[in-house]
Amino acid sequence: MSASSSTPITSRQEEDLQLWIDTLKKLESSLQRSEFITWFRDTAVLGRDEGKIIIGLPLPMVMNWHLERYQVPTLEAVKELDSSIKQVVYKVDGSLKDNKDRTVDLLAHFPEAKKRKVPGKQEVRMAEGIVSKILNPRYMLENFIVGSNNRLAQAACSAVAVTPGGKYNPLFLYGGVGLGKTHLLQGTGNAILQKNPRATVVYTTSEDFTNQVVEAIRMQKMDQLRKRYRQVDVLIIDDIQFLANKERTQEEFFHTFNALYEAGKQVIISSDRPPDELQLEDRLVSRFERGMIADVSVPDYETRLAILQEKSKEYELFIDMQVLQFIAEHTTKNVRELEGILMQAVAQYELEQRMPTIKSIAEIMSKLNKDPHVVEEDVGFETKDQKRATFQDVMESVSRYYSVSIDDLIGKSRVREVLIPRQVAMFIGKKFLNISFVRLGESFGNRDHTTVMNSVGKIDKTLNSDSNVLREIHALTSELGLR
Ligand code: ADP
Ligand code: MG
Image (cartoon, rainbow, N blue to C red; front, top):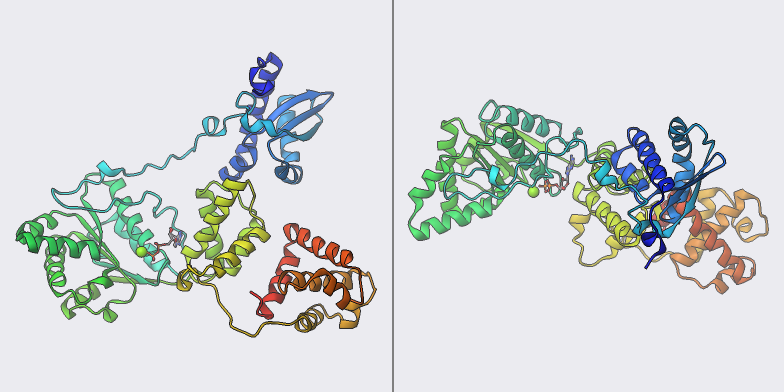
């Protein structure tokens, strides 16, 4: 039994707790919610003494962040409440995690301001017998990041959300895997339902639609299915390319489409390619071409970064900007891949309490890259099949990259301009070529293996804090075909 939980809380501790709640209120307003929750959960005031306030932190790893980023604002906030405080000091106290009496329950004291009003299952009013997939409440038009790759598509969806069955009917979105089509389609459905909870919004995939048609044919209830579909206000069909070669379903869809269209109901469709490239009946294609067609393509760097910021906010994990930039720089193919890396980082944080660093993200990426189960198209990492680089290649690349001669790399000079490249070369030799410390020592002018070990260790540590070195190593190992 922990002593703290059995010891009664003193009035002094109660005062401290209140002071901390009030301080957090001041701090919270200037921080991103995810940032606030990540760094201030399980913190407490451990005491006040001679102008010092001692803030307890649950883990050693958060100490640096507090010292770097929050010490000054915390002092400013506390001072306003207790003018005798002149200094904020930190102390790690591992028991805080399990000591709910002293720490502030952030989620209770700081509820999410804008609770997302999400259309629940019952709000999705389906006409009798019509099945719609439940719209994912995470897919909203509000949290869809707009960039040049999707501006038209997003604008069209927003317009449809305001005026379903209006100018943009049907709305046809197309683009590659993982670029946000489903998000936009469902976000539009959600928005329509938010405005008008009584609307009958049906979201289905072409496979589901096909299954329904097949089933109706089998049961000889085609008339009934048709009638039902005609009561729908908004019909959303995702991935319509799968209707290819399904003549009967296409025919049924054609009739349903016409009926809805003529009644002024909205139809929204997505596909992996433009209408004229679909292997569908011509009359269907020309119907699609009558409406609004917009593509979604691969987001540029700025959009990728903005998406990452949005997603990390949604996952309530505050991730350093440099780390986000690193992910955005190195994942370029699609958004699902960006999210995948972020999810791994979140999982790592939850399981191991490891804040994502550039290094840990690089590890995640290379793991994903190497995982044979990951479909390359989905993950989007380039794979290079080059012949394996040798130690000599490493030395040459490092020499060229830093403009330091190979003799200097091997030599004894300890000036920074030479030292760092030398350590980097050793690091790459060890980590990427798996050369033993002893062999590396020999190659670097007969140095002792412990010297090499220290150098490699230094770079290893630096990677956590210095994104430049990581970037340099990344550039070098990419050039050498080692990743
Ligand atoms: P598609 O249907 O085109 O294959 P999805 O809609 O399933 O792609 O998108 C994959 C993931 O990427 C989803 O989690 C989605 O939320 C996210 N995503 C894609 N584009 C954006 C964007 N512009 N803003 C926010 N999230 C996005
Ligand atoms: Mg999709």
